[in-house]
Image 1 (cartoon, rainbow, N blue to C red):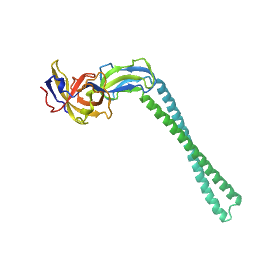
Image 2 (tube, one colour; image 1 turned 120 degrees about the horizontal axis):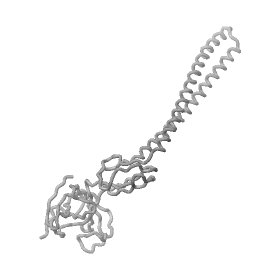
Image 3 (cartoon, helix red, strand yellow; image 1 turned 30 degrees about the vertical axis):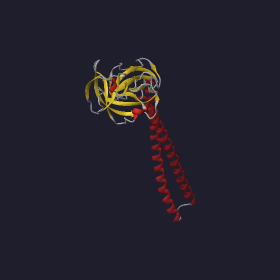
Image 4 (cartoon, rainbow, N blue to C red; image 1 turned 180 degrees about the vertical axis):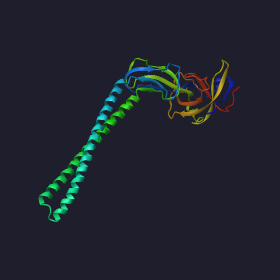
Amino acid sequence: MLFLSASCSKNNEQSDAYGNFEAKEVSVSSMSNGQLLYLNMNEGDQLKLNEVVGLVDSTELYLKKLQVLSQHEAVLTKLNSINAQLRVHQQQLDNILIDKNRIEMLFKDGAATLKQMDDINGAFSLAKKQIEATRSQTESIHAEAKAVLSQVNQLNEQLRKCFIINPIEGIVLTKFAMSGEVVTFGKSLYKIADVSELDLKVYVSGLQLVNFSVGQEVDVLIDKTKTENKILKGIISWISSSAEFTPKTIQTKEERVDLVYAMKVTVVNDGNLKIGMPGEIRIINKPFKN
């Protein structure tokens, strides 16, 4: 959005709507429970997007993570042991299979007894069952390892949430917590607002509503001196779809208007706009009244 400014003498009759500037505010809350080790900001500070500004004590979570990692190491050791057993059983099965093939050939030639055949078949069947049982153990341990890794991932996420990460670039409006306090999940820590653009929230009557549409450019007037206004360019970004009773503190162009429609005009902040500052709008190219 381009920023343009001009000046004109004050004349309230030329304005179509009146209101005050608002900012897009975000309340940042704690995502974990514990002592707030630090919260590095003061009201009025400019913060960057994704800047780490605080930390909730994560010692207990970290120790729990070390414990779970130790469990994971134990599971891996068990898995390696089972895999070693599986290799031994497989080698035994391979050896039995060789003997089985040899005895079957001897049996065909009458050089081996029926008991030898029964013994080798029994040994072969037992070796296969041992491998199946060992493989079943392996699958169980794999599932155990997966469950432990899931715990590690959950703890990593909880540890990440101990860091207070600023969600938007802006100015700190209010600080609600101090270092050393014990905070709980959801407790508000500070409020921040993006002041690069401000919204002038104004109210218009139903008769005026037809003159405005979302995306329309309008003149925004703010006080420059006691006798002169500064003109900025603004874009209508929102118009309420329903009427409301006229707020007592809001001035309207028409007198004795019971119902009005709220409207927001987005204005690029050149550094002069402040939250709560009054402002007015005027349709562009509207002729001045003498």
